[in-house]
Length: 392
Image (cartoon, rainbow, N blue to C red; front, top):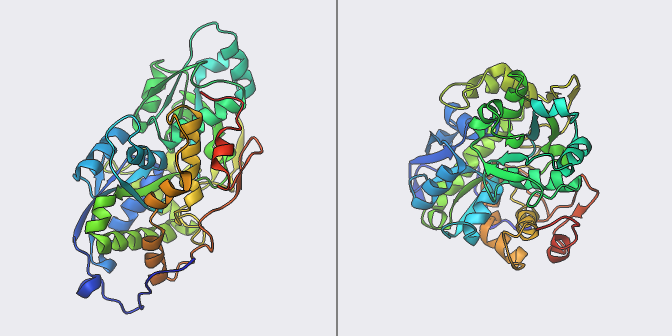
């Protein structure tokens, strides 16, 4: 893959033609473990190296993130991959051309069931399917945003056990930090959310885990650094500086020796507002399911992984489009590759990576095997979207 412009190590991002157009950048985030790179880029002053100041702006919901990025109240945000694509396509709301500047993290989400299901003999997907198919009552599950990653992980996981997430259950949208509270009061039977809220549900004895998102797709794309296309067009140097600061933060966080400290920093009420020990467990890869099983997950949340995580692979964005088509959010097949090329700013990312000597993959597509054995490589998105036995 070609890199458009090389920046010498002595490049001055505070003056001259490469100077950021904006000095202060308002970056939205949601209280989740994977907000860490936004927070760390600011707290550790990685942003100042590149002539900007990141202002982390905590948001109550993904709908708030969407609305404030689209309106310009936020310049950029930690965003669900599918949120950015949904807004770009005008699914379920206002259409606005969008941009993915980089991927923030892989892995680190989960599916939990409320503890009352254990009393009905449910401990996994197979027993859950048996219960739901019994039709003894209606069952309700929560995700965090209609086109978001959590909706897609939840749907994919349920469907792999023969549960139709559109016809067999009711789904509701709940902000991440409110998941455990809603499960506690009986508003739902299960949920899909990012950490630390699955771990918090176990800690509070409200829920137990039946799957991590990396069980569904090892090293899957998750949150992205999202902005409007308009912002990037008007402030390309600012956008590049922001990516560079976030890359520095990603490398810092992925240094295992730093993770306990990062957990302490993001535990603050200003950020995740959860006990540091609840954050740290799965952040370090130490998992428990709330039913007595413990293990170390090698595919725990990753932010850098030798440059593989932050690269905005076209095939990653295209996968979410296939799921939008599968679940009826898109009535017709889009031009999958063209849409991904519009949104994922590989050229800008490659400029930032080159300045930091971060390796850029040779190809903008990657191949992955998901939990049902299906291989996704982006080569035949129309065929892939149509291959599933359970669909809307």
